[in-house]
Length: 140
Image 1 (cartoon, one colour):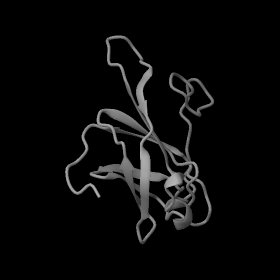
Image 2: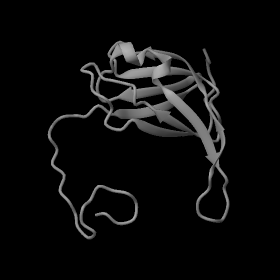
Image 3: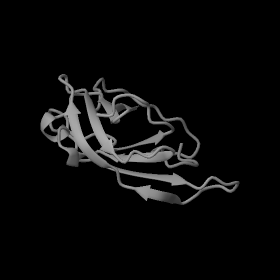
Image 4: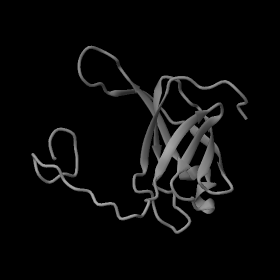
């Protein structure tokens, strides 16, 4: 339906059928916090040429003012630096070493420069991760 939050439904009071084509799109499977940064997993192997470049990953952080009223501006904005991007042998994971991870902040990832091995862009290029705690361990 097309009510409330932005959606792609065309009718205000309808259920629309989605037919799966059988093809898995190039998507972010999951993002996990690591002591030194983040591990991003994908549904298809990434292009090692673009995935190994730190500049491929745009990252910003912010938090909100928690109050009784609805909504808040984005505050305490920072721009962490991607120091290193390491691609796994199968191309399904990238380990990012990050300087400037902020506990209690939303980390906003823009992966629009990333491609899979066939040159396709991600279907959804934005991802968000709220860092509640940076795990202890080796931070290299």
